[in-house]
Image (cartoon, rainbow, N blue to C red; front, side):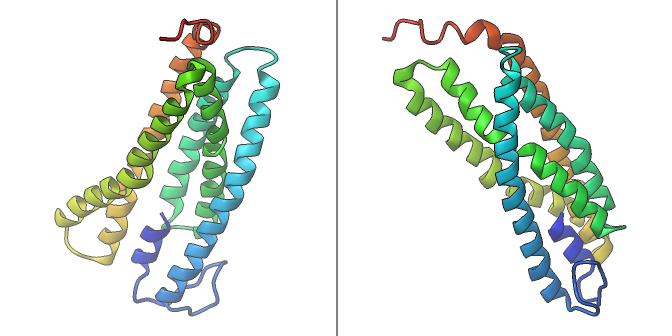
Length: 209
């Protein structure tokens, strides 16, 4: 989203709440990158701690607490992410607010996913399971998603006139993939909650081969 906003205002003087007046687009790129990075660090730390604590307290009432917290946070993050993408062209301040909320909610899952994995895998196989989960997560997330979004954006650009507006819109539309994946992930966690109570007691009791 930050990239899309920067491209849309390229080669122009800009004014927004986070930057000095009449700032060149290159400086804006750096400043917005720092803002985005700072938000990611803060929301990541706070989100992990808040998600783990919420799951720990809710687990006293139901064994399905962990996947339900993950599902709820992802489904709540989806509209925040959607609004951040939509509002990026109109008001950068509102876009940052909703982006912060989305990142905070998505960060709830990091510690909880590891806890879920360790609770349903036999002790001798937990290291392999954790390594596989981290590897697949990074392949589909950090490594694969930028390429996919860039590919969709390039296809959209090629289908329209090459203007700054369509450079912005092509990135904006490609980011909607994130919203779809977010909702899909929440649905998967809801399905996990249906089976969590049955699977958890069996994992430690299964005879290891």
